[in-house]
Image (cartoon, rainbow, N blue to C red; front, top):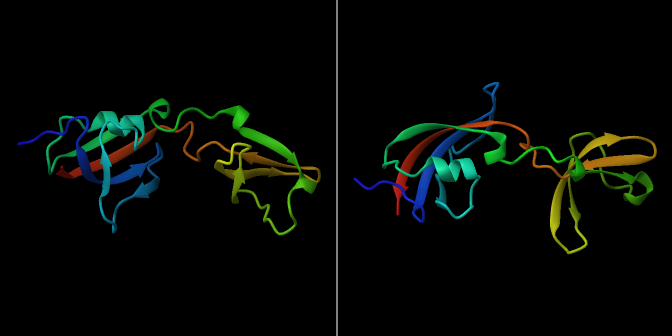
Length: 142
């Protein structure tokens, strides 16, 4: 039976959980996730955990933050003057916004603090700094 190797296109079903058991993502009720192993299309811990699996295999991957979305980067938080934000932009804590970098890249940010003078935006991935668990099932190779 064929085993997954780097360069193979695979389809998996998965459920991603945090250390406390809460689910942050799942393919349940959706088509399997399809990607090419070893090309960086998914987090490093997922890429590295699939080689050697066969169709129908189930596995639990315990992925450290460094092999997932990396550590929290304090430099990715920025306080900006409140007057620089248009009045129609919602500023509730946890609100997801998009900014544009000077190079024209779209950058998702989250509102993490609001004062009378400033709004602090965080560009870290919401799962940065967190260890992740994935229960996966290999659906197909090829």
